[in-house]
Image (cartoon, rainbow, N blue to C red; front, side):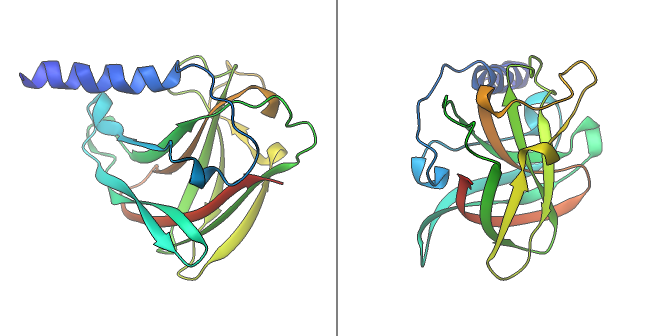
Length: 182
């Protein structure tokens, strides 16, 4: 397959993730869903390289995201993302994540109805540690990535959830065993 056609194919796959139909899930541990998909900035010309895999941990299944993030060529991210939709999030305050990593900063990206373009999302950061750590991230901590989005995040319209390494040149390595609403 010619290089240009391969890039176009990757871009179309990434865009299809953005407009994917609703997936009804209950607000339990979302790592167990098995619906996480890896992709990186190479869908838009970047040169970051990485991968994801499911791994077994003491508490069950976990997802590992790892690789080399590079900001060269207008890139700078690797991520795993899953489609999500549930109508009963009013009773929840935020997202709880249980993870361990290489001590770097990572991000949760949430896309909802306000996220119309690929580079639009709400994000919140968290710092990993070499030992298992639980972090609660309230919905009000999520900030918009664009001024063309609503300033207040509405969790009832979530379309996708992403675990992301981005924004700087670094080696990413994080394992997430729980991701759920609290």
